[in-house]
Length: 360
Image (cartoon, rainbow, N blue to C red):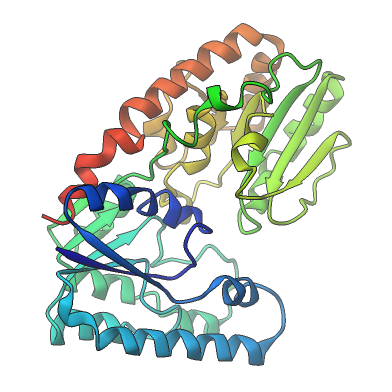
């Protein structure tokens, strides 16, 4: 059986791809599937497309991507399944998806891990909204063989268009990657400082402002407290003991284990309900106790006071973080419980059967 993966981003660069399906390629191969991957952008084009300016170069990159997609149509005959992550093209209507499903009659596996029929941007320009054509998500759902959704909120949306919907969570490789024992010489447990950390991209840095005042209060209360932000862009936060670490795939895990506590603030809106808890799962897999907003799938992943904390107000953010700062034994206890949760329900190993079921 042969699978064509039509994906938006280059391999090994986007978390949504790396932790939703790229880490299952060997599993597919061992079960008799042959996988071919075609990304819309290469690495240089992807970096260019999400930078400011360079309109002409971006237009050329888009043209190249569309040409690759056109070429892929001529090679569809040999494939049994077409796995589409989010969309085949970043702008415009779902023409390629329609051709794949209706003309070539291929079985589409449609995978998404965000509420991509919505926008996370305030006051989005109407032209941008028109180009993104977010209503195509519903159409692709209707034309698919199976739909792979990262959580129940996304699955409930998909079920309004199709009955073959699989909740396929974003998962963590706790054997080869997110394994704390592999980084025992780096971890921060014995440091004189306690480090509260956050990791993410420039698009989610804005959520840190939701808890900035609580972090400022904690900084005043605890002289041995510091903060670590791992991202692709410098944060704009008024914290005096803050270290910024540019995200690097080669050091992402060794950077994460420098944290004693991980945080995941989110606003309580529809876009955030589509999030799949990846930050929390990363922390928990590395036995880093997590404090998160009680939004969406976070309330399914975290049991209050058992394997993490859910903070619904600034006072709760300060209270739960202070508790973890003061009591190292509590950090260890919560961290271990979080790790066990990931092992049981959100690891690659625990999810293998679910992932394979998409192709049966």
